[in-house]
Image (tube, rainbow, N blue to C red; front, side, top):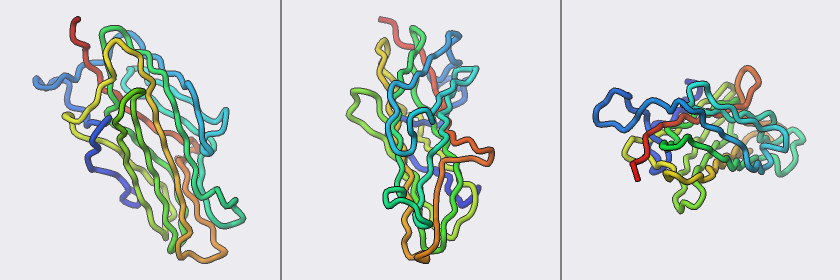
Length: 216
C-alpha cells in the first residue's frame, strides 16, 4: 500500500466491517431486491464546483461511488493562498425499499500526492445522518517526501454500526477535506494532494450494510 496510509482503527459511528452473511449472530443479510435510489440534494465546497460531482449505485445495491473531477489542494508554484485546503460537503437523499434499513459499512478513498520534503498533507472525512447529534470523523496524515498514489479506508466493528431510522428518509451528509501544508519545504517548491486515481477519476466508494426493519 502506497505510503502506508490505510487506516485500521475504530470510528465510533457510521462504519462497520462487513460480517459474513452466513454468520448466525449477524443481522447482515442480502441486499433487498428493489433498488435503492441515491440522489445528490446539494453539493457545496471548493473541491466540488457545480457540475463536477456524480453518484453511482452498484448493481447489487451494496455500494455507491462518488466521483469528482476537480478536487485538488496545493501550495507553492503560484497557487492561490486559499488553495492549500479544499473541501466538499455532499447532502445525499437515500431512498430505501420498504421494510429495510441501511448503514454505511466502510468508505474507501484513493488519490495521488506529490509532497516535497518538509511538506505535509491530510485527508479528513466526517459523516452524519440528518437530525443525528453524532458525527464520525477520521483523519489520514501524509508526510513528504512523497510521490505516489495513496489509499485510505475508514471502518469500525459491527457493534458500533449506526442504522438509518426505519420508515423515515433521512438525508446522509458526507464532509471531506484535503489540506496541504508547506511546512519546511523549499520556498519555490510545489506540493499537492488530490482525491484521484491513476485513471484520472476522483472517486470515493461507500459500502452499504442491510437489515430488515422490525415489524410494527
